[in-house]
Image (cartoon, rainbow, N blue to C red):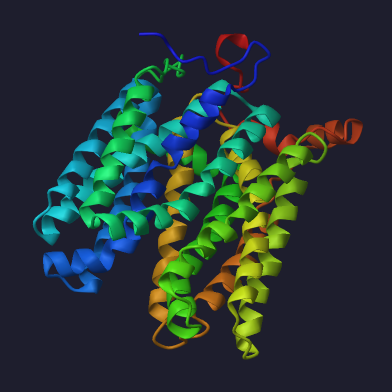
Length: 434
């Protein structure tokens, strides 16, 4: 079978690589969001309460987060292809279970399999990009992937709503099966990128890999701040239906148009990042993105606190917020993964676990506050999360050694925060010496 060409002769990513890594990274978002418009229909069809059906989302999210910690080290030991193949097969099998579900317990079981498989695809996609690229090239590739990835949470609810209208909730899972099969067929043509797998894998090795990751101040700086930023985004998606539909009188079909509109900011942020990479340090670019996030989240809480509720105000603030997210995330992911040349799978897994945990935290916080602060539930969570993200990035700034400070003074364009390898990790190099 002919392998896909993923790196150009100039050493850059091919369009095929960008599209395929985007699809793998977005598989979990696709499976999660396409299902949301069908939740009331699922409750009616399976004779369950709405709160019980909501547990299928929580189970999917929890499985997605936990399995990242397993799939990352496995891909470092066994190779990216094996773990990715197993993950895709598990995802497709789980989705078929969802299509055929006759009760809620069966549906939850299918969602567990979906979450485990999508988790493998997500982790391995990040590890593959780190295997092939480092530094500014990795940041540019990540920006391209995240720009395309931003379309997934915006468009999938719209697609899911149309499928629900045309054929019912089983159609949404049927479409997910088709998407998974097509993606698996393409994945079979990916070559192995982990050319130096770790020698052995045991509990001690896994703990050691994660310990090294969590000891890296550069990793923690980006991982914690990005997790808090994702908590803000999750809080908006958890609380905005009640605000837009329940309080502002927006029709459900109109509400489905707001996520795509809001997430155009991610594309704008990604385009801006691509222009800034190489001109500013990753720290400066990340600081710009977090500044936009903090301003937008404070504003989104200030307006309802002052008694001003309007869909256009919320949407405008969210566009600014998501633009900041689009600026911050590419450099944050690149900076978090760059120090880990030989354990990119473990670093990617821990990063994904923390970010998914942030999503869960944001959603649970809104759920807990909705009964007490119905108008300020998601705005207050976003404000706290946005400010905390900016503060954590500042407080966890890596400390430079005297030699690094001298090098930075001699070459102001040198970004030591990204180029510094983690303790005990060899300097990053591309496979084949590229």
